[in-house]
Amino acid sequence: MADYLKDFELLVLLAVLRLDEDQAYGVPIATEIEHTTGRSVALASVYAALERLEDRGWVSSRVGESTAQRGGRAKRHFRVTTQGVRRVREAKGALVKMWNGIRELQGGTT
Image (cartoon, rainbow, N blue to C red; front, side):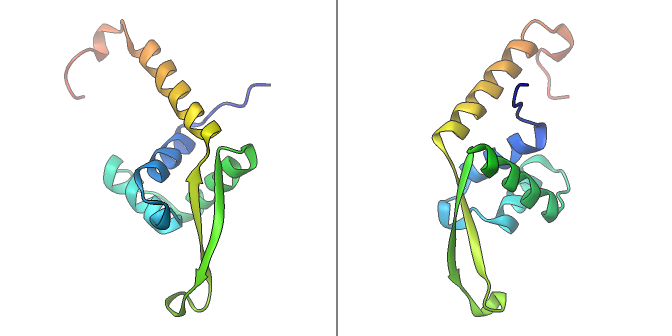
């Protein structure tokens, strides 16, 4: 069975790629998706997607320093792996191929 990249997982990967590694953790990832797409994002959905992506080897994580602002808890920072970048490129290529030639989708912004 193929291991397909889902729509929301693609958004999470793109958000992680857009953020500096020290800012690529839960809340900023959700905020990046919300600001860029205009979609409301549940933080729990971001964490669930990150867990699935890490299980597949498409992101890796490291635990940062604990902070007083977080009640002594540490942030978990993410980065997209080489395999994850490859998956994002493959997804873009597939979408572009499917998009091309559809008259209703050519030009315009809606």
